[in-house]
Length: 178
Image 1 (spheres, rainbow, N blue to C red):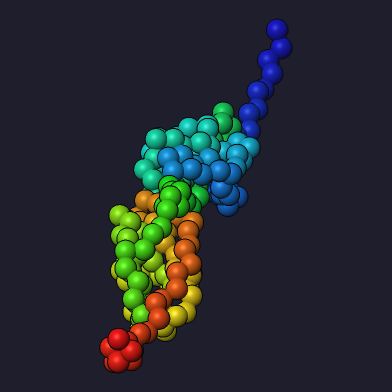
Image 2: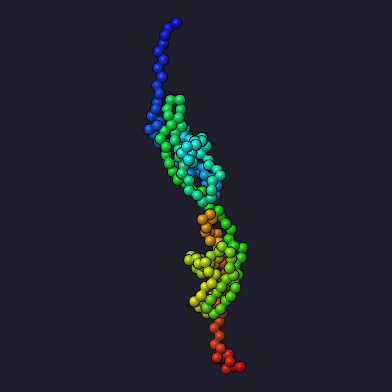
C-alpha cells in the first residue's frame, strides 16, 4: 500500500467580505421580505439566523434592524455582518362614508363632526375643527374630510361636499318694507 499525502485547503476569507446591500422585496403591516441573496442567511436580532429572507409576526409601522451574512461552510467561516433598517407599513383606511353640514351662515360653514377626521377648505391644508369662518356671503365652497394619519394608519382618501354660504339680509330694509 502506497502512502499518499492528503492536502486540504481551507478558505477562511468569507469572514472578510460583506454581503451586498439588502433590498426590500415586499412589506406589509406585519411582515417584511428581503430580496434573497445566494449563500446568505438572515436575522432580525443578530443572534438567531435563518435561510429565509421573510420575517412575519412583526408590529405595524415599526422599524426593524436586519442582519445578513454569508453562511459558514465546511471550508469557510461566516462572513462579517451587514446591517440595514426597514419598517413595516401602516394600515390603509377607507374614506369617510359621507359628509354633511351642521350649520351654514352668511360667513361660516360647520360640518357634522366625523370621529377621527380632519377637514380642509382647499384639499391641502387640514385642520381638526369642522368649522370654517371668515367666508364670503353667497359663495360656493368645496369642503373636504378625511380620516387623519395616525402612528399605525395612513390618512384616508378625502371626500368632498359643495356648500354655499347664505345671503346677507339687511334687516332694516326688511323691517321698512313690512
